[in-house]
Amino acid sequence: MGNFINPFSGFWQNAEPLVQKFPEQTKIEGFKGKATVVYDDRLVPHIFATNDNDLAFMQGYVTAQHRLWQMEFQTHAIGGRLTEIVGESALEMDRENRRMGLPQGAKETVKQWEKSESYPMLQAYINGVNAYINHLKPKDYPLEYKLLGYAPEEWTALKTALFVKAMANTLARQDTDIEATNMLEVLGRENFDFLYPEWFPQQSPVIPIGTNGISNPLRFLPQHLQIQMLTVYLIRLCQNNPLFWVVIIGR
Image 1 (spheres, rainbow, N blue to C red):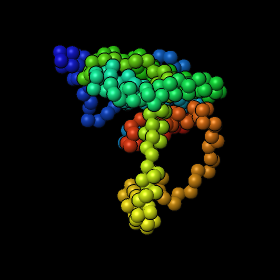
Image 2 (tube, helix red, strand yellow):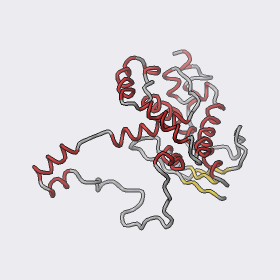
Image 3 (cartoon, helix red, strand yellow):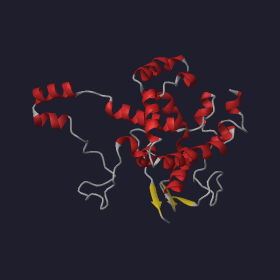
Image 4 (cartoon, one colour):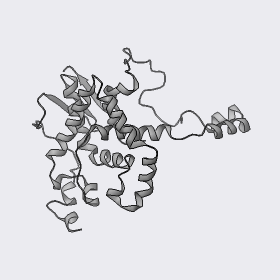
């Protein structure tokens, strides 16, 4: 408790001003390029970079700046390591994720990524995350680290793969086909669609309904090589709570 309430390194150091301000210029160790990050009035970061690697590096840095603890905690959870942080209360969850093979699946995914021509871009993202971690002092750690009494680890390709497995587990683990089919038979199509719509009409999508598709469709790589899409996925670190970014290459 003493470390947590220490006015020089404890939770007092995590206080934020009512109006968030960022330095106009920052020299980041390990970053040799030049990039500009502009925050709008909703704190959406707009990243301007001259090439893909600089963009990925800065996206990793800024993502860690805002979401470091969440990034780590979720990869610990899906990797079967949550007990290391919160104790035996998470032991069964760790065992379940290991039984499902999620950590092993992440290791196999990294092996495939390493064969890709796009792997340097992922490595640049990782370098950006670690550049932010390495500049932190204990007083700068996010509040959750201080509450739980541990320090951030180095970010790796394996942690990135674990996060992808976490999203796959969330989006594809549930199996309700049989139950849904039975309900459809009982209720009929009209009632079923009313009770279980494909999307909730109360939700307001980012892209309004009726908007035409993008003019230059992305060319997708094979599933195990879709590393260029990872930086887009990784910024959505809060499941069911979207984050919005703007990235621009070539300026």
